[in-house]
Length: 537
Ligand SMILES: Cc1cc2nc3c(=O)[nH]c(=O)nc-3n(C[C@H](O)[C@H](O)[C@H](O)COP(=O)(O)OP(=O)(O)OC[C@H]3O[C@@H](n4cnc5c(N)ncnc54)[C@H](O)[C@@H]3O)c2cc1C
Image (cartoon, rainbow, N blue to C red):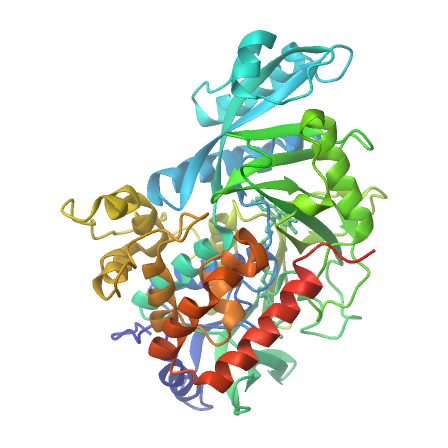
């Protein structure tokens, strides 16, 4: 069924009513119901809505709360997967990278990478250049170049020089992962889809052994309801096995934790990403610039913790990442006290029986059981391909969609930001178009005094906070500061210098009184202490 009217993204109660009405027993139900509001679910919702299907998405916490706000933010082919012979994944990822660079400029941006070559260490310039030639071949463009040591040091100042022969420059891309999810959901919503955050799918409804719907609970007000659909898609990432009893057949998920350290840019200044192998175990790791800070990561470890709890970095991971920074930048004397923030995410990797977590394959898997389609694994970069694969698989249940007739992803339609805007805004113009798509103009439309300025130390405009609070289904302060904008990881104390001003915006746009603000602030600060900081010794 084609949705004729779209409901504004943040009109939560209207979306909830529509969810229940459209999904009521006997009403025909939704064409497609997606469980999980990370990039995988968002991509499926977007592509389903584009096809004119009636589609809803339910996320138990906030949109992108799971792995999709905690990645290394790279939109890349994954050079290291070439080494493991996963050519198909690399080729597909490179193509997706280039498509995203074209279609969402300002949200997916090119990023230069530098790999230093030291005497006696693998890979040397020739081997690495050969690998990159293949990588570039997939993109049909040569983008790598070798620089001998004196020239290379201009590109990578402060880098360890002992034994340095030179370095290779190549190109990939970077994004804001949570914003990519938000942008994708907004696009879906404009095409009539219904995305709801803080709605948990508690159980599945079955008839004659087939999944025909779900039982949902609104985590904000406790309301509950049954929702029927032609097809339910389980896009819950590492939680994919929990929607059904764990003993059911299907691939096993191996939850792998990856953690990052965030530094102020002035303390660890890198103009491009530094790609290197960790001195302890030779794993590929990165030190890269992002949104005005420098990030070092990632680790790759079996995650033993409770999946319901926020993942946190351990002291062992902090040492591992500090070792890597000091190995590559010994003269900077970086220590724990320099860390601005930390974050950890759990990779949904399909268990393939490898002992070393980093050797497990990163491609996605789709499986079907009792009429429910589940998808897990994969990468941020390949989310659209995953979505198309899922819809192909769902096609027999969806009369409007026939396998092989799925259209290609079309251009995002942006209203251009007028050139008459103040300089600070025209500089941020591409960013706003990329981050907010058709809403870019509205972000600037209703701003308070000085809100077209950047928040010091970030690329974020004050206007973005107001827009997010007003229009982006913010339920908690952490939604606003950790996922709509990223002040929680970009600024000391999670943005504590600006709390008064943020409070004013929340009061005006979200109607929070002093008591609500105090409660939200306390919860946010506790979360930062426990899961976004260096753990105490
Ligand atoms: C450390 C790290 C670094 C990475 N770096 C990169 C990178 O640089 N580039 C790249 O391409 N990829 C990267 N990845 C991989 C990428 O981030 C993931 O593949 C992707 O984010 C997974 O998205 P997802 O939507 O499948 O899962 P998630 O983002 O985890 O979304 C699943 C959602 O389902 C929700 N959910 C669970 N159960 C229920 C329920 N019962 N009801 C409703 N909702 C539910 C969860 O709350 C969650 O939000 C990285 C991953 C990690 C961990």
